[in-house]
Image 1: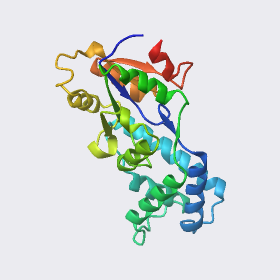
Image 2 (image 1 turned 30 degrees about the horizontal axis):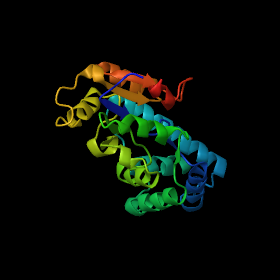
Image 3 (image 1 turned 180 degrees about the vertical axis):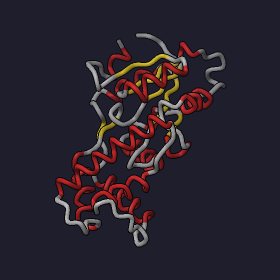
Length: 231
C-alpha cells in the first residue's frame, strides 16, 4: 500500500451517489410547479440531465462556478420554451425546498467499502483527508450536512466546494487552495509526491491533479474502486 500524507477526494460518484428517489421527486416538483408549457415528466427529467451536463462542462472549461439557483432557473426556462419570466420565483425558497427533498431522499455511499477504506487511511493517525468537490444543483452547505448524516465527516479534515470558493476543478487555483489548506502543523515538510487526489472524472480530477503536480487515481468510472488505495 503506497503511503500518502494527504488524501484529497472528489465527492459525487467517488464517495457518494444520488438517491434515485431524489431525482424522481425533484422532477415531479418542477413538473407540478413550473410547467406552464405542459412538458411531460420525461421531458422535465431530460432537461435536468442536459442542464447538469452542460453546466458541468462549462465549469470545467472556465474553472469558475455556476450557482445552484442559476441552474434551477435554467431548468425552468427550458421547460417553458426558454422563457425568462423569473420575477415571481423565490429562488431562496426553491433551494430550501430542494434541500428538504434531498434530506428526505439522502444520497447513498458509492460503495459499501468506502467507510472501511477511509478508516484504514486514518487509523495510523499519519494522514489527513479532504474533500475537493465541484457542486451543481446541491450546494456545499448542504453537502456538509449529508456527509455528517452518512458519518463520513469524522474522517474528513476539511471540505472545499466550488460554489463556496467560486472555482471548479480542474482549475489549478482550486487544487492549489487544497494544498494551501493542508495542516502544516501535522505535515510540516509535506511534498507533492506525498499527496494524492482521487476521483471519477478524467478531466476535472485527474487532469487537475496532474497540473498541480500531485498524484492521482481514477476510480469508479473505470475498473478501479476506492479499495485500490489499499493495494
